[in-house]
Image 1: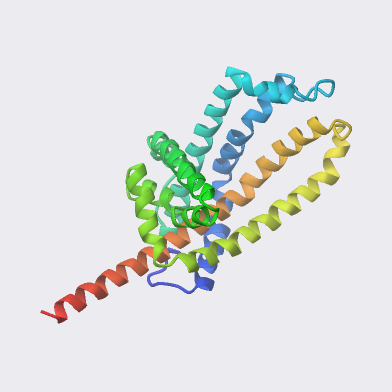
Image 2: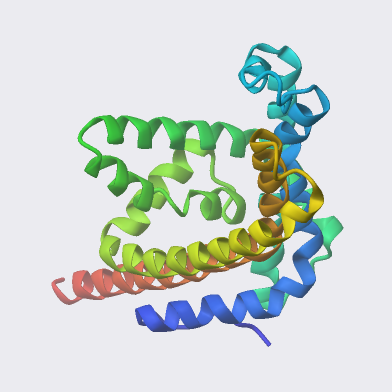
Length: 266
């Protein structure tokens, strides 16, 4: 049965749709989450393999930043993460619409969009960074208003610039309710992340790396990053899709009301 709502929802309704999507999809998308997690930890693995966690040289990790191999690994990491994230968006949306889409089909559909996702991520980062330089508040406003650009690029086939501007137009009239939904969602994500960190803080010392703070930090980052991807990424994507559905319904309702009003004045 489809989860996508047919009419605009309250903030609580959007969050309820988020939890429904998350609950139904998490057991079906974990391979994509694992792929995303592996992608995100590749730079840390590179540091471990190349001696960046040498306890006798506390600056060894910083030396990695001058290595072409590190930046090549970082590029592969970002590309792999974007590929997996795009696949997650497509697969979870298909689940919400009660459509058939295998993991392989989601990966195939996302693969062609990776260069555009990469470019859009850069533009997103530049826009938010400029906003942060301009007294922080504009950066926060842009970070929220551009949050649905992934949805527009992947679901509607828009280019990077059109997806960013389209997200801004979609969110702008409902910025505060979007902020409210995201705030609740990110609090939940933070609590999950904190719980994982506390759990691993107990477990990892038994792995024999607690005496080396650099190694401890890298290993903790790798483990937490992988687990967080499996648990939190599908929740975030479910929230972004639930928001997208709600704001699209609201805009379509507003457009319809405007057209009816225009006809009434003729």
